[in-house]
Image (cartoon, rainbow, N blue to C red):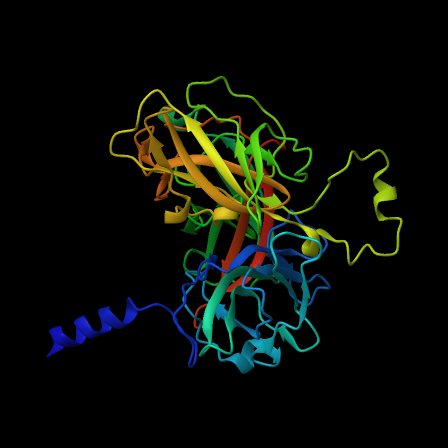
Length: 447
């Protein structure tokens, strides 16, 4: 009987998360339906930012997305408080929400002068109808209300109650095998404002590289406590493959593309572009240049810009914003290689793939041209991307459990510029939830 009970518990714990009456979803950044495209989630007013805000602060998060099915739908959202491991916390909605438990996405508009017809939606949170009262991890869940609450989008975000100062630096790897390919993060926190009784049990840190979830390091406990100063300084533990600078793709203009394009055509309801072929960079010399650390931004620029301010001098700026005027382009990527990789699949990878290996972004080997080929439907804008393969071992050590590898396509360099989001969690002895009491954004190129 006891054995059967254990099996039942194991089965239930393996099921996807669900809300009351809602279809299954996962506590990750994910788009669940093909008609939803170009999902952006960031601090409002800062398009290249991470979804992290202060508790009781004035900043809002902005979620935006397009629905290519043309008809206006009723989309509803809710937020779920989670523990540091992204399981629903023990708090009820009344304990962490001020306002409604769920609400509608009310702002939308139709595409304007585009081949592809779509409806653009916007949500700003917190708002006057819903706010959060506790710090910690949160999951934003958006679902289609007219179809039995079908989940369409989930996004993680973070609310910080800055009661501890968290500082750190990014250094070269201390392990000899990884010294030229990896970066390490060392952290120190001042916890004077916390009533600590057992720091090793009450505190932990998580670190994300460029906002990615696939290689994040979690459950880092202090290794040194000196009064109010707590250190998280492990040689080799908080280590990340440096990767390479992301490849840049400029699709702001269709008439005069900034990236090298071999062919442009009109397919009726969208444009199509064939990009010039890329080459692997794993054996190349490292070159440092500006990128968005894997992110993308959407804006349109079909004309040479002499005076940027003049672009916004008319009174129709809101209506001519690219949220509604950007066209969709079926973009063909080509990766030239000497031969097909054995026992490896190749994928497009970046913010537009939600930093995941997805079947629709898997590349196909074309022996006629000795290249991998894939297509992606992209809205006009500026994109970062990599070519990645299946997980491998870099320098004899797995890349934090990530299922993607760069060693055969992009290479890993300790000089690469990367962002590191660091999060300090605190659960006092007997506490019911994980508080997020400190955070800092580090950059590998900033001393």
